[in-house]
Length: 245
Image 1: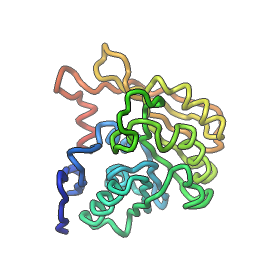
Image 2: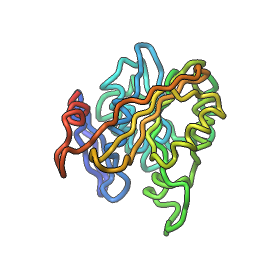
Image 3: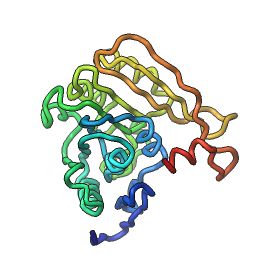
C-alpha cells in the first residue's frame, strides 16, 4: 500500500516478510536494542502482546514477523510517533494484527484493564536524570530520558496488565539492572532470564536483556554473553543470524 511521507520521513526496510517502517530522520529512529529485544522476546500461539513506548511501531511489527502471537498492541504517548506507527501498520497491511494506541504508560492498566496481556515488551527511556536536556519536550529527549514515565511506572503497569504467569521482556542499560530487578520483585515480576550484550568481547557491556514472569517462582538463568562486533563494522555471526532470522 502506498503511503504518503511527510517532511524528513523515510521508509526503513526491516528485511522481514517485506515489512517496512516509517521514521523521521530528524527525530528518534529505532536502533539495535529494538531488534535484539524483538528476538529475545517470545510470543506464543494465541498470545496477546503489548509494547510499552512503541515509538514508530517497529517492535510490534518485528514481533508479528518473528513470532506466532495472535495480536499485538503498541502504546505510545507522542502524537507524531503514533501517526508514523499507524501509517507503518497500514503500509504493511497489518491492521488486523497490530493496533497502535495513543496513551500514557502510567495509565496502561486503566486503558486496557488488568490481566489483559500474555506478554509485555518494552525499550524504555534509559536516562534517569534530566541534566543537560535543553528541551524536555523534544521527541529524542522523551525517548531517552525518564520525562514522561519512570522505570517504576513501566514495571508497575506491566505487572498490572500482565496475566498471572505472563512474561515481561525489557532491554535496558546494565547500570540500571539492580534498579530493574528490585522493582520487578516489588511488583511481583520474578526475574527469570538475563543476557548481557557487549559491543566487543573485551569491552564493558552496554545493554542487558531481561525476562520476568508475573508471579513466577524464584529461579534465574544467566545466558551466555551476546557480542555485537568481531571488529569495527563487522558483526558477529550471532548478530547476523538475529538480523536474518
